[in-house]
Length: 195
Image 1 (cartoon, rainbow, N blue to C red):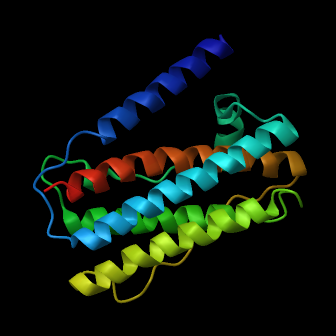
Image 2: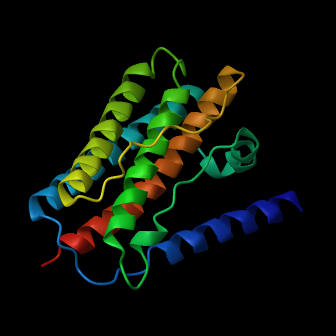
């Protein structure tokens, strides 16, 4: 019964991801140089995240995020959305805002993982810096377009990890959710970069 519930949860999660990734509406007026830099940043962060996942797998035998979904719910690890980027009528301002907000969320989640383990700290630090750089790039573009809020957002409450296992399992889940977010972001940015 538990396995069936977990499979249903995973299927539903996959279905939502597919729905969020539907084609965008009209092309944007974003500079091509900005879009290309964003695509490069996404690929770099994806590589960093994959390295963190691989190291957690080889070092701590935490290889399957789907096995940790229930723990992720109890820890309160959220998933960022890009719903404004996938509607049939693209809302560029809302899309950029959601992209920045998602990166800001993952920046906070990565900070919450500090102390995960000495051997993983450098990988986590690089991932955190790259996510911060990408968020900053999005924010600066929003400022250039005159659509940035007057004040940068503040970080909401982050999960607290009470054990080394929870921190490592949280690392697997955060990296997995970040990868899913980045896959959608990449598709959006690639669409926007098309002539």
